Amino acid sequence: MKLEAVLTGDLIHSQSAGDTLAYISGLKAVLKQLEKRYKAKAETFRGDGFQLSLSRPEQALQCAIALRAALVAASPEGERWDARIAVGIGSAQQSQTYREAFVLSGQGLDNMKKNTLAIFSNYQEFQERTELLTEFAAAILEQWTAVEAQTYAIHLIEATDQQSIANALGKSRITVNKALQRAQARLLDKYLAHISRLIGELSDG
Image (tube, rainbow, N blue to C red; front, side):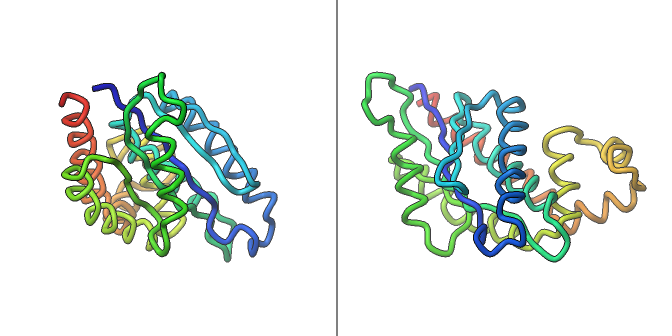
């Protein structure tokens, strides 16, 4: 079965930001980077809303976390830029008027209350296996500082070894190691690998 993933989200506290336009500009810059990195299609709406569609659904959660990491990393002093994201996983059938992943993602975001990251699908077993894990992952992201977010973003997107991250940031490897530990990089990496594998099993099924 061919699947696709759609990320629908909005910025957190955009109206109370010191510079709402800068916040939205920051989002657009991040989306442009992610379009290239994940071969995704992005659009913005209602000012602080956005949507990303991915033809490789197994990368959906990595893309979602990369987006949030980049936003937090770009936060101006005294503020926190971040986003709520609903990830829809569904059939990629082109014949459908309203494709499944788009509907799941959009409705999912509307129904999210306190959660800042969630996966939505019509596959009950998959949903049950990912729901609680994703809440735990979201709780980690919500505790990130800008430094931790920046370090994990580079680790996730550009470089896996700590010396390369240190070179990119102009910091020592020890400093990078401590930032990754505080960011819970090991647990997030295991979470992303696990979710990617589960989505791959859905596609194979």
